[in-house]
Image 1 (cartoon, rainbow over the protein chains, first blue to last red):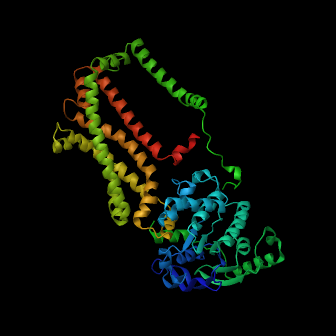
Image 2: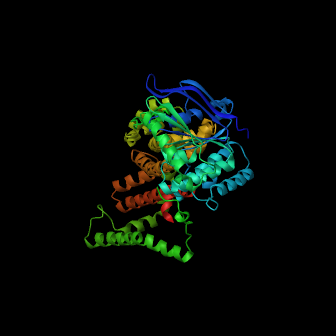
Image 3: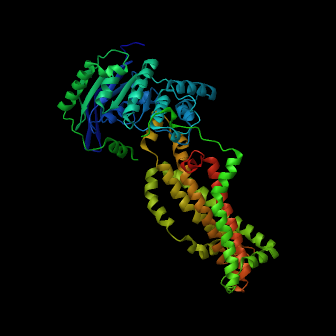
Length: 274
Length: 277
């Protein structure tokens, strides 16, 4: 893979919800290179989830340009250039684990044999072999989220978008899935744009942390995470890890990172008319 | 959130035959006991207290009357059941189709919905004399029409709710796969609506039977169950009226059970089926 290739490029992206309403994003500029793991961090209401959806062409920006894989974001979505993982696993209850993972493959028109072969491999990747015929409600929250990750990666998208994927999990599960995600990231070689509000998670996972602040949502700082790869459990105990956590925290404070009261999810839901 | 321990999920245990029988006896035992006791109490109290037969005849007399004239009762039952079934199929299909249209074109749905909900609250059975005029007093069509209209509203309103109460992210996920409307409906909205649809269909079976029988009360073919009940009660043949009511009850329960069975077969994945492991 060409390390210099740009996978995501945002130029002066602005998003306003409603006519003259809340400015969720203002003047966002960002480049994400191939193979990078970039985390967007900020308090709720800073527009990080909105920004992720702008990259995924799930929300149209009011102004600015979004280029994904050298195409318009819209074209990239049409060509299924990214997989997405939400805070909730968003598994379909009426489908088994295997069929949930196979869903994007069905959409791509893969035949049954090719699908089941790929599903088997994905289950191995997220260590859920043997659970293919379970229904989502028979799994724990962490296992559900692993299914969701397997589904997002099933069709080998060059870009993985993750919206607080581990936010609803307990600390121990979360740390284990962090490790697992890094292993998968290394194995798949894909580019990740990750949203979280956990500073330590951001520092541990990322090659770069983008700090955002609310009202209007904007980028207030970028911290390069120069911790050695691969990250291991002990990474969290290195002095450099704490320095970087402090650096990110200072940026957040400087940006006036008091929690915003407007829920982004609500704004998005209104926009979607759901 | 639950922990992520690998042991968190056990395979669903399969019953051995003997354990299955034991479990069934335990589950159904109390219900069977109540049934037997209820019948014994009916028979015993009516005979023991000398209750007048126009109030409540003894069950054994009702059953004897039914058996002596079983062809009439069964024919009447089938006649009326066909009216109910026709109305059910017509009303439910129309209800699902309209719900699909309203879910697809949401502004249309928003315009129509308040009236649909209001219409759902109308005692539609009150229209029975009118439909008798429209479709002919003796024609089954008038009863089918009443049953259809009664079934239509709950099926439509519930199905629409199921089609639209989809989480935003479920739709976003489909859009991330560049899915079109057809795929979103086929793979998300319709499966999501199935539990809603089935609970409406179960209600609709009951409503269809009520619609057909009460439709008969306002006049209908001599073969109809409702007519049989009304006529028998009118000539003090209370055992016959009760026998006809019994036929109506058995048909109604069987109708409901049939839909419940289809639900169970098609929706093993759903929450309502989860407790049975």
